[in-house]
Image (cartoon, rainbow, N blue to C red; front, side, top):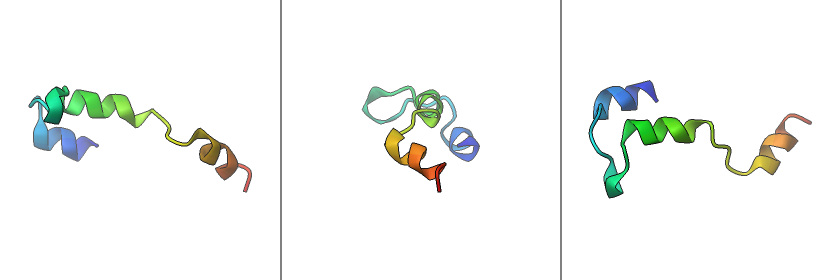
Length: 42
């Protein structure tokens, strides 16, 4: 993620997103929470 932030910097992302700021906000968002829960049980 840090490499992407350094590459695109403060530039606006595609579709009008805020670029690196938007990507940072998605880092903590878990897709498929059931799979994450099962992962810790194995």
